Image (cartoon, rainbow, N blue to C red; front, side, top):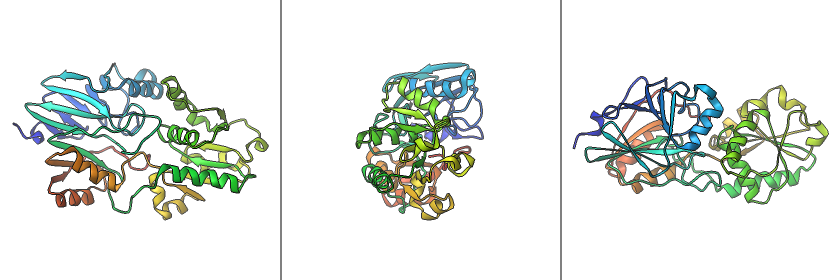
Length: 335
C-alpha cells in the first residue's frame, strides 16, 4: 500500500489529493474542490467544481451567490462517490450545519480529514461520527490542556441567571454568524428561554438559511430599528465586531457577553471589554481531541491549524506517529 504522504500533499493552494485530482478546502479557487463546511476559511468562492453536503452548498449559495462555484454537487452523508482513482465519502463532523469529515480510500488505505469538529451534542447539526482509518488529519484549534470546555447547560445557565439578576439591562452576546449564532439560539430554547431574541442585521441571513433547512430557532426580531426602550431587559445577538463599535452604544446599559472557546482565556475577555464571558465552542477541547485520536484507531496523525506541537506530543505519548501538516489559510479566531 502506498504511503498516503505520496498522494495526499499540502500545497500553496491547500491539501491536494493527487490520484483524485481535487483539493480539500482550497485556499484559492481550484478546478475541483471538496468542501468540509461553510466557514469562510474553508469554503471560498469561484471553485470550478464543488463537492459538499447539500447544507454546505446552501450556505455557500447564501454567502457567495453566483460565485459559489461553477458546478455544485451535493453528496449525502454516508454515500460514496469516485473521484479519479479515489473513493470519497462525507460523514458528520458536528461543527456546524452541513459540516463533514472527508473519508478517502485509495489502494487499500483509508485517510480521514476531520475539517473542524466538536464532540458534544448540538441541536442544530448531526453529531461527529468517528471513522476508523489509517491516517487521521485533525484540527488542533484548542489543542492545549488549558482548554477544557464546561457543559453548555452551565454557560447558558450563567447567561439566563445574569438576565434575571439585571432585568433592567439588555444583554448582548457576541456570536459568529454561521454556527455559533444558531447553536446559542437552540440552546436557549432547550433550556427554557422562549422570549423573542433580537438579531443584528448581519446574523439574519444565515438564520434564515438554517430555518429553511429545518432548524427551528424560535421567535426572532430585528434589532435594527427597535426602540431603545424596547430593548431593556432583552437578549440581543450580534457579531463580535458590532459589540465594540457605534452600533452597541445605542443599547440600554448593555451587559456585554461573548460566546467562544477563547473566553477561557480571561485576558482575551478583558481585551474585548466582555463582562460575561461564555465558554461555548464549536471546536473540540483538549480532552475531546485526545480521546478522538484513540477512538479512530489511526496509526498516524497529521495535525493542522492550531496548537500543533502540544497535540503531536500527546499523540506520541499515546504511541502514535504524528506530524504537523502546515496548510495556509485557516483561521482560529472565528470559531
